[in-house]
Structure formats: C-alpha cells, structure tokens
Length: 153
Image 1: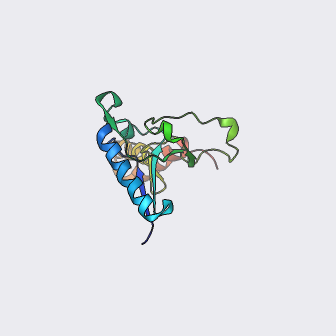
Image 2: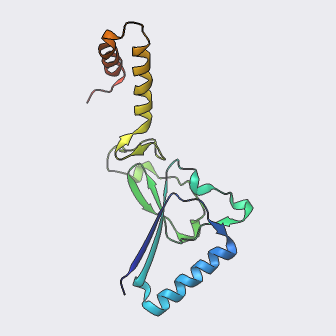
C-alpha cells in the first residue's frame, strides 16, 4: 500500500461534530490496519484568510483534520491539535529571525508569487492615465505614476 497524505488549504468547516468524529474514527481504523505512517493529514490555514472560520463554530460546524498548520508571511508553523478550530494566531516577531515577510498582507492577496492588490492598484493607475483625454502619452503617464509609488530596491 502506498502511504496517503491529505493536505487541505484554507477550506471551510465541512460538517458537524458527529461527522468530524466519524471521519476521525475511519482514519484511526485505517492507521490501525495499515500503520500510523499509512495516512497523514494537514490543514493549512493562512494569515488573514477568513474562509476556515466559516461556517461559524456556534452553528456546530467543525474541521475534520487534526494536524493544523498556520501559514503566516511565507512561514509555516505547527499548531497544537487542540487548537484546530482556531483560524488566527499570534506569531511573536522576536522568534522570527528570517528577515521581512515575503507576503505581508497574507490571505488571498498573493497567487503564483504575484501581489494581487498591487495588480488592481496598477490597473486603476492605467485607467486614470487613459482617461486623461489624449491617449497618445498614456504609457509615460502610467510609468510616472508607477515610479512615484514604487519603493526603491
């Protein structure tokens, strides 16, 4: 048998306590039959991502996976299983010595290494440059605005 690894990213709570317990019983039976290494599971929750907090706990919904990980500013942290229902954690900046975060805004602001908020902002600048009337110089107007708002390297 090949080992199974289940990794869930930013998913909502899929069911109630009863269904979550049933899932855990099935996993326990599978591990008992095939060994603990036969099945591993992880749930990655990202900083500033509200989806894992839905539907609310007070309505009885629960996550199934018992190995939560917390993704915060390009760093992955193990979270105790007892905290698997929580979605926002404090990371002590004194413990982080790897330099500035790669993804400072967290959540769904980055895809494929691209800052989505910056892309939307720049599209707005492009729209304003094109709305100036004479569009023959739109590129210069746009690049001036980019230069004005860009941080030096």
